[in-house]
Length: 431
Image (cartoon, rainbow, N blue to C red; front, side):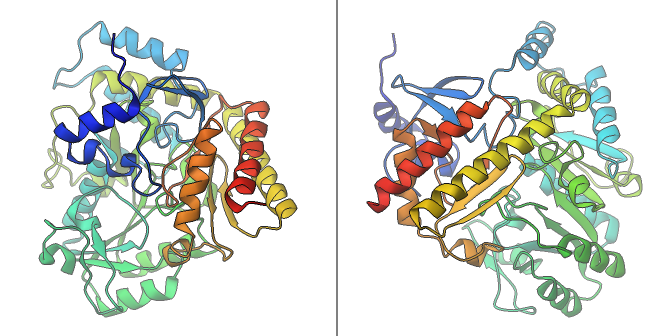
């Protein structure tokens, strides 16, 4: 019987895996200490190799919208797995999945399945470039679109200053084609467009950001971007890998009344299995091979197990609108409890929340962009994270991540989280 603790597993992992993890944030470097290694999860709970139980607020970074190991998704996977694991050939479920996505997201007329959110965003950018015949893209500081070269670019000093690579291995040529603006700053976007007339293929953003913490678009921001893109012939891409089918049945675009040209999806459409997709206007998607000249392929794209899990999830969400009512109620109950506690303790930290997404920022200024998010007290957040973990609440190990609620959380669970939050704040601030 394997009796290794999380600490022992992490020490062993570092001999075989870079940094001991397969995705950087998992290493706990932003909060200190060593990561807990997860053994299993069910409903609102997750269990580690040390025998601890936690109420779960990550939910695999979003896809477990119904909680872990939901019976419906489990059955779909079990049924599908009997017929083999992968074919590298078309299947019926791919068609059903595409049809369901198109029916639930009005802006999507055609969709292509891939294997991750990174694949989806990389592919969407390539198609936009092929469709427009232009090279440059605009992205926003603090928005994360995966680890594609085009996205790992730090901002330049102004509208006509090229960005610089954020990571070794990203070429300056790629950086020269990536323009970066502050989130929620329409004037900065307009300046970039004016300085790069007829050279910008696409503008990509998270409509609600989840990767600098939860940050909402200010009123008119998304609509302003749509107007700029229309005027300049720029393809507007909404990265809804996190928000798609979470903030509403039609995603953030339905919630905010914005129609993109292309949308990237992931997380929920796999029900927890690895998956991604990109889709949008037929006139753009018809540029994708073999219908058109823009090449993109993948042996495991449309994997039958992922399609089965995702289709079960989407069918359930489509048929049960009360899921979104429950998520709204849970989000508001948590936010109200957190704010009441902070008022009681005389604290003025910033809480951003929309539906089932939220982040508590350890700063007293409004967080509307990455610059404001970086004003947070990161050392204090690390202490808060460990205080919450010790009280049985499993959160994302970074100030710059959104938390995600699931329908498996009852009012009792929310109250427990609110209580743990208040006690943790008292503990780390010695109130």
